[in-house]
Image (cartoon, one colour):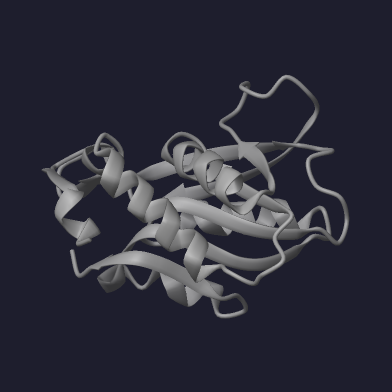
Amino acid sequence: MKLESYIRNIPDFPKKGIQFKDITTLLNNGQAFKAAIDELAETLKGQKIDFVVAAEARGFILGGALSYKLGCGFVPVRKPGKLPYKTHSHSYSLEYGKNELHIHEDALPKGSKVLILDDLLATGGTAEALVNLVKKFEADIVGIAFLIELTELKGKEKFKDYPVYSLIKFDI
């Protein structure tokens, strides 16, 4: 299945000059959504993964489905004020602003095997924040996975210490 054909381009969102890759058109097609999760799971086959860690909002959708498929736990990482318990946080820059992510301080046992997942790799800011949060737990990052990679922005270069998986690659 050509998953890239299910991605919609939205020009100038969330600000002028950004070509937003909208995955809702993939998510609302049952066959395409299933194929994406199945393909991600197949890519990770044979790896020991205890937890999928993903950031809101689109990462949650993919992360929950992939965790279910892999039979492992899911750890939500959220924006400030959204998690009910004590958290660790990390501030970071995006290609169009700044953000901060939080994770429960008891979310991951030391030494657990973690897959970081997000919908899109652009400059790598969000994934880098996720890596920094997971490192606070002394967990082992077994890989970083994305539905989409914008190759021209070279975000993958930030993660030379980890296997990086992406299903769909765009040059922008």
